[in-house]
Image (cartoon, rainbow, N blue to C red; front, side, top):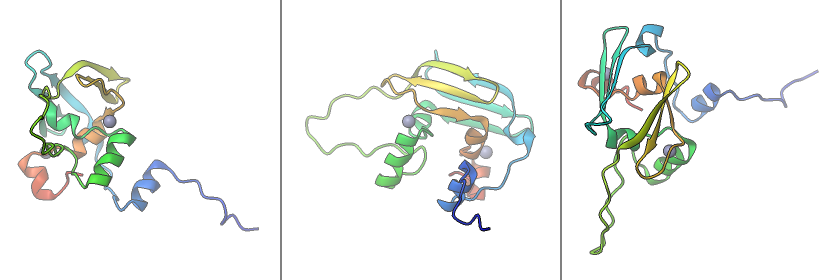
Length: 147
Ligand SMILES: [Zn+2]
Ligand SMILES: [Zn+2]
């Protein structure tokens, strides 16, 4: 009997098929030792990881790196990289757009942060694993690790 017709695709396998095979990161690399969300200051998020690494993102970058399916698809379609801003519309009547900042930041269990942004969007769950992978410090950029 053949089971070839049956395919259960895990999230991991789906990623692999999308050509985004990723090394598994060590536990200390995806466990925050200290998290600073500078919501009042409106600057961004800093995470010190258990392995001693430090990641810093500003809020605009994080908004443009939203990992939800809608934002992910939109980036794929428009060829934008994770964290890259949308191109400004070429209109003379450009409306002022407030820079992205969260109105609410809530922890999701012990594994993620959820942002409610000032544009109303709140579908993205930023897991520690995701955040570590999108660390864009010089060291990580040099390794080409940023998604
Ligand atoms: Zn999103
Ligand atoms: Zn880094």
